[in-house]
Amino acid sequence: MLSHTFVKNKEFQSFDILKQKIAVQMQQLYPGLNPAISEWKGQDIVDFQEELLHTVNAHISEKWFYTHLKSGKETLPRIDILNLLSKYVGYANWDDFQFKNTVPDKAADESNNSNRYFIYIPLLVVIILGIFVVLFKIMSSGDYRFQFYDADTRQPVVNNIIEVQVLHEGESPVNYLCGRDGSFTAKTDKANIRFVVKSERKCPASA
Image (cartoon, rainbow, N blue to C red):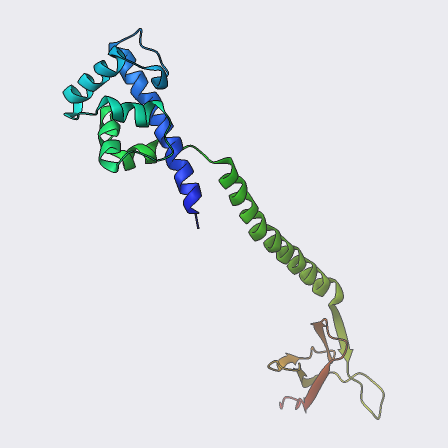
């Protein structure tokens, strides 16, 4: 949130720009006019008063000119006067002038950059950690092949329908069907694997 002091400083910057544009506008009619409005006096002020009256139908006193345009008073003119001066240099009003003549503030830009760092750096750390986790899981996981043998003959169990249900803790079971050689392959990154085996012998086809 912008502080009151920051807003005031921006308004004074805008007012200084407004005075510069007033001087440029007047120089188009009076080429020999001093470009520094704070140096105007006598006939210069009278010419400006007449120009304001002719252009925006406004009148300012010589005292007001000395108070606000020459002395650099620490308070801004009333908003109605700021609106008239803004109209004189070609803007709709004071708000329009400020919007179109905002001076980029270095401190504000640095603050915005700092805020970006606070967002981007943790985000970058999270992304890097996520990549490491994924790589670790990929590198630590492997393919495990299981072969089933007959307890009596010690030979691989083949030509049987063997269904294997792998049980992962906190997850739904995963079903595998062994191949014709009685083996199945499971990919996992777990240190231990539990499964349930169901076997059904195929009946020979009748002639």
